[in-house]
Image (tube, rainbow, N blue to C red; front, side, top):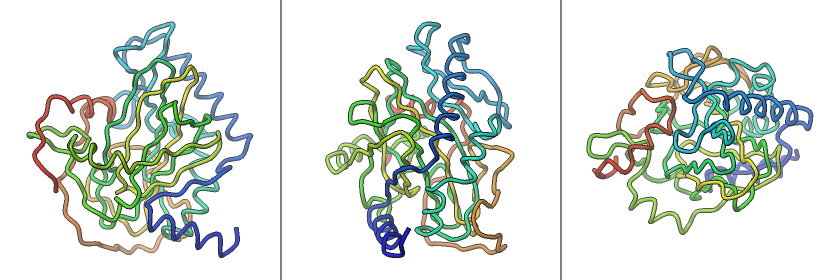
Length: 297
């Protein structure tokens, strides 16, 4: 990549809060990851409730309760797949999106979290608008969510929707009427949705998204799956202020650059997040309709 190309990506990331790149992973890595997810999906059809276990005792594999069944598996989240798959761990440690991130965010980068979000045909999974940073406050906000497309992402299969520039604005509360819903107030979503852009691309492409960028997605309306391998990276000098909501044994591993042992702080305020008691973030967002908005933070 030329210096001019890198500057263009850096300017876009700083201005809009996201960039997309083609061929973030090799064809071989993509094929291996897809094969593994197919196996996990097939396995999920033999379960009628979330299963597996992560470090804090919650299930690793989450299913959509209303639509999941033996003939219509609705696996929707795999937490910390890097702990149970060397192939996913290898990609998290080395991919073209991470190379780019070292140029647009920070030269020294550590691994923060990983997951796979799935929108299988007929699963009906929707993600209400939110920002990632209120789930994972750090001493500064140089955190980036990298979404690697395991399938072609189209306008109809539930693509990521982002609102450009919102990473430079307010940090919205995810608490409403004393309930942590993991979503912004519906009025805020309605206000910003007209400005939202859909992130589409081919399998193997990736979207790099600032952790303060407002985003969400609609259900998959097609007969094909839409699956994302999502890795959160943090600048090495961004120090976590709360427990990792997706705990794993590789937390804090340096994947680019070096460990400096320094702390960089920025000035912001937000509400403390709730550590999840449910299987995944989807359980928190299921409370959206039961809470009354209380404003922003």
